[in-house]
Structure formats: C-alpha cells, structure tokens
Length: 352
Image 1: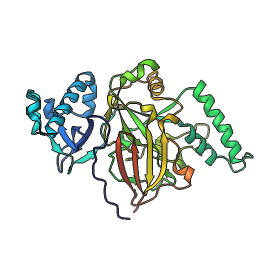
Image 2 (image 1 turned 30 degrees about the horizontal axis):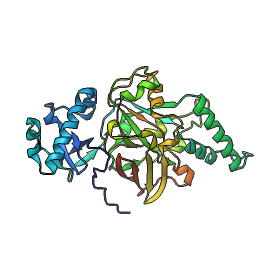
Image 3 (image 1 turned 90 degrees about the horizontal axis):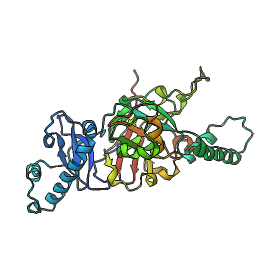
Image 4 (image 1 turned 30 degrees about the vertical axis):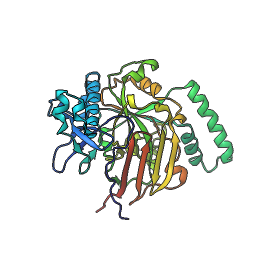
C-alpha cells in the first residue's frame, strides 16, 4: 500500500510549542513553533550552538518567559505589524523565522529516562483482561467484565500506580516508519499522553507534582503482546524490555505544548486511527491515577530529570480488543486534543 507521508502541521493549542527539526542535510535544532507554521531556531536566539530542547528544560524557569516573548514577537511579525514593537530581540529574530514546510520533524526531546505507566485506564484494563482470559474461565464475558471493573475501582481508591522503565532508544519521530521486528508476533498500538518533566523531582508530593511538569506531548507506546509475559519463568512475570523497547517502538511528538496552554490534561481526547478507521477514542478522564499521582509516585524512587518522560498509559481500543494486530503497510494516525497529530507507517523487518 502506497502511503503519502504526513506533512508537518502546527495544529496545537496555545501561542507556541517546542519541537526538534532539521533542514535537509543539516543537524537537528530546537525550534519554537507558531500555530501558523513558522519556526525559529533557538540555538541562535539563546547563543548556544549545542542547545537542545532537553537543555531548555534544564533551565525552564528562565527559558519559559523568554519563549513566550519570542512567540508574541513572532505573532506580531506574522500580521505585518513589526512596528508594534521596538524590542531589539524582535528585530533580530524577525528574519530568522522560517516556514515549517520542508523541515523534518524529529522526536521533540531526547529524554534520559522514560517512565511508563501500565494498566492505568479503567476501560482498557477491563478490555484486556476479558480478551486474555483463559479458555476454561467459567465466567461469561459480562460477568468477567463486571468483576474486573470492581477490582479497578478498588485499585484507584486504595492502591498505587504501576510504573516501569522504558528505553530512550525506542523513541522515534512522529512521522517516521515503524519497523515491526520479525520476532514480534502480536505488535499492538498504545497511544497515550506523555508528560515532559521541566524541573527535577525527587520525593515530591501529589500537591507539588504538577509544578515539576513543563508540558505534554503524544507517545505511541507499541507493545508486542506475545512477549509481555515470560512463558519460561512465569514467577518473574512481565518482560517489558522484550515487549516494548524495540528500536522505533515509541513514536513521539510532534510537539511539546507547555502546561500553560493545556487547560485540563485530565480531560483530553486520545484518538488513534488505523488505516483511517478509529480504534482508540477516549478521554484522559478514564485514567485510574492522574498525572500528579503518577509523577509523585515515580519520584518517590527515582529522581526525575528535566526532559524526562512520564507516559500515562493507554486508553481502551487496542488491537487485542479488536482482534486485529499491526502488520506490514498499516498506517497509524494518532492525535490528542491540543497537542497535534502524528502519522506512522508500519514496515515489516526485512529478513535474509
């Protein structure tokens, strides 16, 4: 199936977003992106040729006000009202704005750590449990669903989030092809909201946690269902290295939208289409543990660093639920309210 690559689109909420982009045959650069599709290379503005988006988050308290001012100046220039401001910075940067057209969009940040939340959407867990129940389970699907729903409600009220570690090497760009490994028998999609850490967080409380979040982006946390559970060592349980961390198994982006432009991350629509057919379409309201609880929980053990990601879990509508897993030529279109959209094509790994 021939698929036209998605053209980069600056469809996000708020006055600006951050991304990592590159012109043909040039090094990637951290970009300030405006909704009308113009980009500013921040290396020149900040006077740092080695600047990356992660380094911006390392000085987020200083960078955010400056980014907001740059975006405001850029918006004025867009309306041909350059004389409405006389700031030196605005004059210096007006000529540096360029069109998004022709630029490659990479994953918006290179994190040092990736924290992944599992079993965090009520309906998703219910669907998976029903789909994967043993053949000799005496319960009807309806009875199993009701029992699991009750367990989920108790878990949200009484238990702790389930968080494990992912590899940064699994991250790829929002429009890049995804290679399905030859050993992956049941590759599945998991579109989810990703939290980007802006300030170091260690043993922070739930009430403090959101102050350590810089912004939000989109992640598709692909999973090979056949290798989630170890068949040879059942007592050990899950094998997240094998099932989730193949190269390119985490398409990320396209943009990081600052928290100031996301009114309620607890009520965003997460939508994934497979070859144009809607598979996931759920609100983040269905999360068992909200963003603050996830960030706080992860920080009780690990020190969260600027640019790190906290993936918040996948809502209902995965391939196991539909009885349809990923295969060569499939195209996934993923979007989250106000954060933009990504498109990735699945390519079967070439075997010799």
